[in-house]
Picture (cartoon, rainbow, N blue to C red):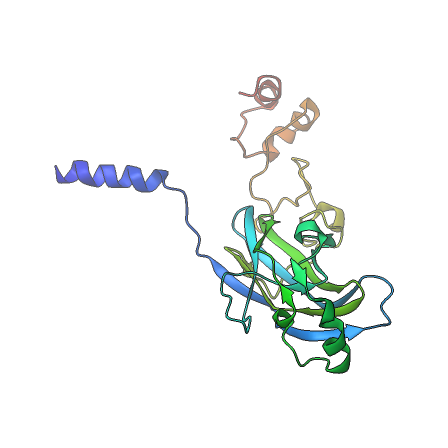
Length: 241
């Protein structure tokens, strides 16, 4: 009986997907209401770039906090909008749902004195897509002209910040140290763009053409398994087994 229960528990654990802990990253401190009469085109008034390491492709949540009026529902305010990697993610193009007509006067005459929510009403938390792996994300708070300001802005996901992210010059998702394009003379037998080495790509294969099997090429592959000879390799290319 005990063995059966242990076996059932093992099966349940085996089929439950991995659960990753949620973390919240502060992207921006609050920016009190201000104004700039010289702005003629959308201009960032705060910017930050973070390298995020995400265990899976997922949806992250941008939210606000620290609103003096006591609203704690995660709503956020950015006058005028917020971009992620150059894309405006605000609903209807603006990260506020209401702005008082008289907000410009205190913003101009008493800059940096009033929290943004004294004159603006926020929007609900915003969902953004985060790719798996290590990727840079640039967040901009943008002034479209006139008044500007924001609440604190946070990002919640299962991703973590990587302070020493690998360099990826051509932006193909492969770090330069393992990118075949950046390592002249290195081998890439399976043509996946990743250098064949114990630190970059230890899974070499499968072969995708007969030519890869010829002249001893069949010996370079170890996935989905090793091949006995050239014919064995070519058979796999033709039949997939």
